[in-house]
Image 1 (cartoon, rainbow over the protein chains, first blue to last red):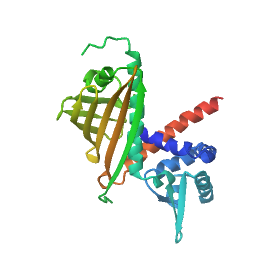
Image 2 (cartoon, rainbow over the protein chains, first blue to last red; image 1 turned 60 degrees about the vertical axis):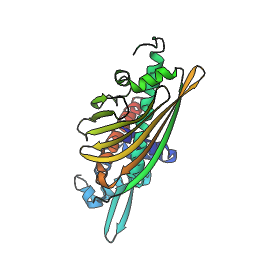
Image 3 (cartoon, rainbow over the protein chains, first blue to last red; image 1 turned 90 degrees about the horizontal axis):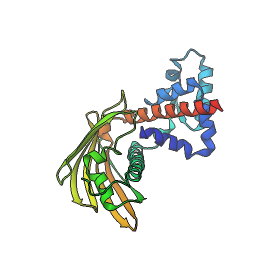
Image 4 (cartoon, chains in turn orange, cyan; image 1 turned 90 degrees about the vertical axis):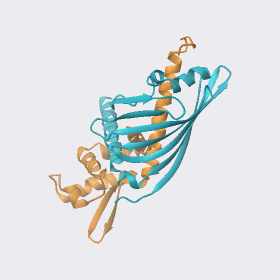
Amino acid sequence: MAAADLLLNIMLNQPSNLDLMFQALADPTRRAMIDRLSRGPASVSELAKPFAMSLPAVVQHLQALEHSGLVSSQKVGRVRTVQIQPEALSLAEQWLNDRRTAWVKRLDRLGDFLAETADEPETRT
Amino acid sequence: MSQRSITHGSFTLERRWKTTPARLYKALSDEATKQKWFSPPETWNKDVHHMDFRVGGIETSVGGPPGGAVHSFRAVYQDIVPNERIIYSYDMHLDDVRISVSLTSFEIKPDGDYTILVMTEHGAFLDGFAGDGNEIRREGTAGLLDQLGAFLAREGAN
């Protein structure tokens, strides 16, 4: 899926954070949190709900994710809301990048096809 | 949640291959030939692709990732100059939601033993019609996690 390439691009374009991102995502709990956040922002307590662990442990995981640049959070009143950082990139940019990536791959295949068939006679229709 | 909006964007890709304009044109215009390279990633369900290559003719491609939204591409050929130029307009649906309307041009230019292809796409992205876009974001994140898993598996093997 091309959108995945885009997210990977975000990671690759932030090389200083790359190690931190991979470290952050190496943990299954944190991957599950990212999966939940991909459906939209959530409060810390909402994020904690599916996990059988203390709130401080959840907060520690979130700090690792936030430190890596993959998520950001804002505190409004007593509620801290967490969101996935690639959301900062607009959907339109994601869509456009999807289209572009799809065509980069297609043109790679077209180039391969043209090279493979270079010996075939040209007059066939 | 649905705010009506249009976001415009464009991109251009240029490639230079050791081939002739006629071969390149055929790969872009002949249904059977196009199907040899046009298809989406193998992990997707096999796309259903039809192509009626003439001005006013329709091309459709329907498919998508297993369990994900059905991606429907529907194009109308607007301008055809054999071996030189192809222009079509198209819209894209995710399930029954139209997410974009776009214009795509292919310019074919001979360059000695080589042929240059310039592909330009102008798009109007219908943000409001795409709901909150979670489908795109979710697929992206799921894909990222898959890639990450593969990366970690490789790293772990070292």
